[in-house]
Image (cartoon, rainbow, N blue to C red; front, side, top):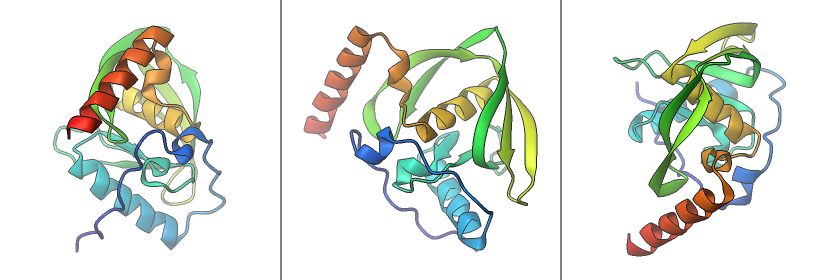
Length: 170
């Protein structure tokens, strides 16, 4: 049985993308259905992670699946980083909320994250490489930040101008 088609991605600079998401109090069937919808949207991009705010739902929910074969999504409520490695990793990041552009962003190569699992249990998990990059990217979204906030003011201005040009052409 396939999940319902996901709601559209909010276009940047929608205000929901810049506000901290509300914490999730309990894992309910509604939350589980939203995670299912988020996974459909993530796979359709295709991408390796998605935060609920990207679909206009201001709740602290994220999904990440950086596996080769897919189908191994980690569902997280209220994720927070407990520890980040000193070693950095650079990766080209983008967002379906700001089409036509991407930027190389340096983030810690590994992180330990605490979150509430699909079973409603508090869990800690280590993420490395692309998994770690994606988790950090989603946690930024849940805090009202976008990947380009990690750029210098000049690079950010250039990236947003390029995205604006791309949007006008498409």
